[in-house]
Length: 115
Ligand code: 5GP
Ligand code: ZN
Image 1 (cartoon, rainbow, N blue to C red):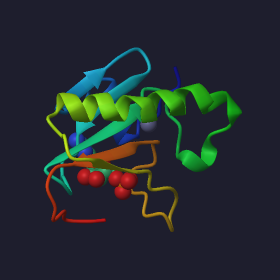
Image 2: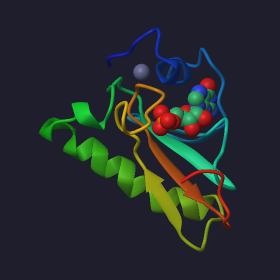
Image 3: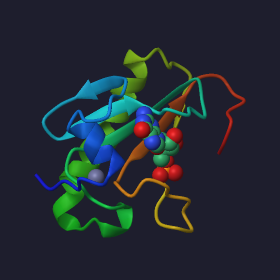
């Protein structure tokens, strides 16, 4: 599986940097955002290093489906029962700060810090 040793999310996937994990399977890791914008704020991250949503192709369709499909089950497990928001910041103008594909999933009562 491809990894970039300088990438912070690859380092979290490999266990070199600790994170508060919410889910792990063979393809995906989910952990709580270090600077949450909402009462519940997790990042769904593929273990494979993909730079951004701009880099995905048809070969990633199943992976993307798995990421999105995990969100409702995770939110339920984390006690979010009144809706949630999914955000994928992409590229410079999209406000992406970590260049490893990730899906923000945020829930809990408003007001949120961002978005
Ligand atoms: P982006 O702006 O790239 O969509 O969001 C990156 C997110 O990753 C930010 O919300 C930021 O708080 C989070 N983040 C950055 N570094 C770390 C880290 O080392 N650990 C965790 N848990 N979250 C991080
Ligand atoms: Zn990476």
